Length: 294
Ligand SMILES: Cc1ncc(COP(=O)(O)O)c(C=O)c1O
Image (cartoon, rainbow, N blue to C red; front, side):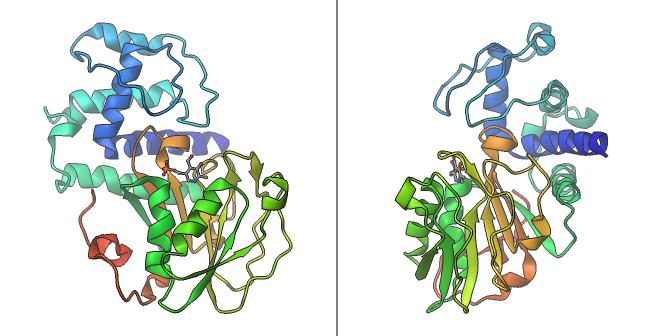
């Protein structure tokens, strides 16, 4: 079971890495160039290297350091090797994955397999859609209320840390965001489990792991019948969880999955039937689902 999960996880990392191609390539080249560098953030720029040399590929076998920053996570050597092969020659096509269109059957297969692997790992059925989106987790602070908070409605937000606080501020732009489980009195050093969610709240939003404060939910917040939405940016795939009890889960992929890649969003589709009055079409998830993978 554990081994199966590990294999599925590795295949997923390769696929997600490939689907986040451009940003991932730059990150990958960092590793070619400097396998012993511990990266300390997202702002370092490394020069692109000539990939044709075996010298770079051989560096994969070198011992790597651990990275104890909050992200990005260290990738298994096998994942880096497979991704690098696909960047040079994708499945023997004679083309790099960077050189094929995102609407081609070859690329569609990559993205579809990545979606299926996410569902397999999380034990989710086909009532869920998996999307890889641009913009990072921060974009979901806006895109969630834009899509799921009806005009004139309200949503409940747990305030357990700085990321949850940012999500609340953004939701307030779109409607009424009611703060519950507020732990700001003690600098977010604990999780408050006793709170009431108003009937009629469209959803309850929480952050499963508070990256900055170091607190984590070890059981689901008591939401009753209110649909649950989680920002799992800094603990997704790190432990089993009741993923299927959520209406929507999102995670910036650059922490637990790959570097500077797209955002991962899982959504129970029936919640998309909510009415959205005014919004740019580009951000409407219902419409994104009809667009080709990208
Ligand atoms: C819990 C949590 N939510 C949201 C974010 C913001 O993610 P992004 O940089 O993808 O916008 C972070 C980033 O550290 C985070 O840890």
